[in-house]
Length: 355
Image (cartoon, rainbow, N blue to C red):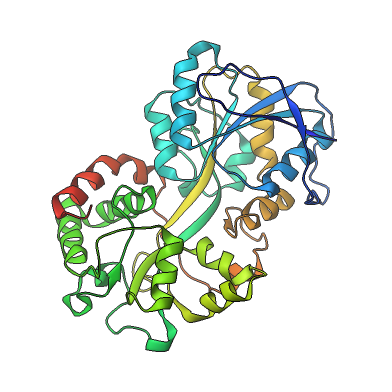
């Protein structure tokens, strides 16, 4: 059994498939597998690049007879490709790793509304588009981190506290062009309005230990190395360190303390990986069936744990590395707000000189 795998080349036509296998075992569906086999294909354009996803595609094919054709690239490149292909696009499903990019796909007019009782029942309302244009499939939290050896910084329990002058010269952050920071800012705008969000951005910039640089991984290491005292990262980056077979990476994880912000307020910001059915999908029914499959308990566990994320379906087990980070109350803002406020978030960052 092979998942059909299509490589993405700039300007190339939809290529012939070639077999790709993976060593991961496919998940057990515990009786949730579709009872009737369906022939045909489903063409998936995905910005996720994990072997565990490939194992899920193989399992879906085994259970349904529907062959998965996969194209991988960055989300923006895939959106541009679907737009350029127009009505001739073979794309059935777009999978991305951020609500902000799902919004970009929505704005590009390439997603089709889906009405599915299964998806409505399995996925919380705040993690799916109100008109069924996309559906969250896994989530991660954006948390504050610090060096345990130095102790937890005082007056640091919320995102708002990052702007407190007491933390001047202590904060390392990614660029303002990073989609994770844009989505975080979008959530702050939603809760407090643009004026307070601007004040917050100005305050955080004043507290920078260095100009924004690197990624979440390099900022974790900057905390461990003592280059700065505070940073903001997605939980799955730290969980990767904790779950690694590399003792050096485990040691770095052990040095990092985690604060889940705003536990006394609206909760910690979460973002999603998600999927939408493409407008004019040639295999629309198979596409809906595939997304529904990804919400079954077994697939949820496999899909989320493959990247040390949290499932969107309640009651599904998470990886031990994620559990070790601690439990938290999450912000239940609808993820659609992370897209709608994206343009304003970028303007606020620019005015603050975040860079």
